Length: 288
Image 1 (tube, rainbow, N blue to C red):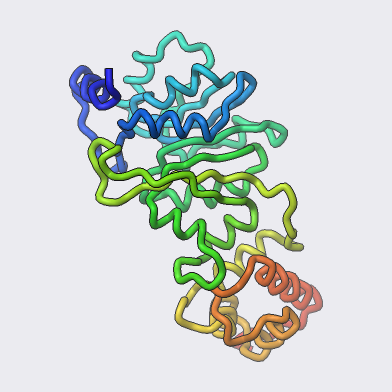
Image 2: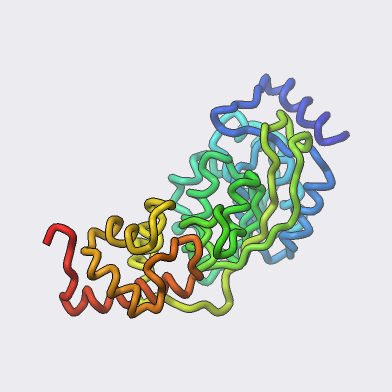
């Protein structure tokens, strides 16, 4: 039975209808499913976290090769489908709930090596990725996301699509485009093209002295995309222009640069210099 026919059968049996509010677009292209499995590179010892498991079509393939699969699905009606259709699978744990609210750190240990896969809901894809890249327990992630989000993840310095998401994700990981998936590969067909990306944790990275502060600096730098970095830092971190200018000089970053032009290393230097200055109590704020 073809995937579309199987999906239509399940929809009819369980009286289901795709919910646009949950970005429910189900993958029905068998070749794409095979490619996803190939990119994940499953072994019997692997632990897999699947986000947006839907009716369990991809889940059934994961179960054949992985040692354990945690399938997350927010829609209770689809969780019921999986419970019925995949019953008896001892290596499956169905987590019915919102991925953004699940306590994933209670499921996995830092020394675990979890492979994460999923067709991420378009409206919260960036939020999910930003949360996951900071976790210590994952090995690689293979996601199907809106091409617009993928373009941001893959953006190099100088591109207009580069933003805080691009910089933060590239600080922690290396991202590779796997393939584009046309709308007709899904049911119902979305209005946009999707892209599969493979995300792997950096084996070696330049580390900011305070990662939380580094993230604050990156976000502040992109608060007003048409403004120069000097203006963004001054405004976003409530610094006087004199202090912001001094920080950029010491970081060897021209004040008229815009945030999208900078390398990750530039943001690290800026945050480290500013952190040391804060530590010495020599920060002058705009209201001073």
